[in-house]
Length: 135
Image 1 (cartoon, rainbow, N blue to C red):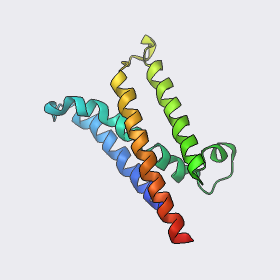
Image 2: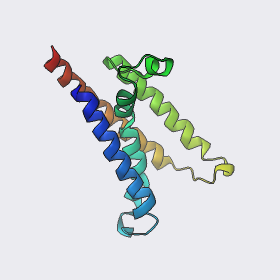
Image 3: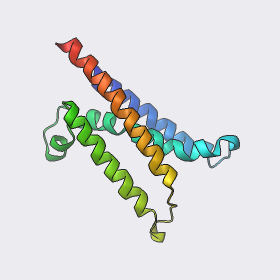
């Protein structure tokens, strides 16, 4: 139960930070010195939230997608992170299509990967702590 509440808190606060960066700080040029950081922060934070979002949304549910993204073991966590990484790569390469009006950037892939790796270790540590408290 603790991990689900923690996951919910991470996802809500992380989403609010991403929205603040994308819709307030960057468009209004409130912090021009940190332009590079503001460019990669949504990818870094968004990829960090992948396992937490999967756990919050899909734990305790039993439909098809929930069975795929349910995180009950280290194997499940690795699977969710690898699938999330695959979706990140596909999303970034789709931005090369001019129709979407977005820009492709290798830094987005690099920092999304970093966020996902850090998230994997943080989530695994929190999951182990919850299992120790329960058992």
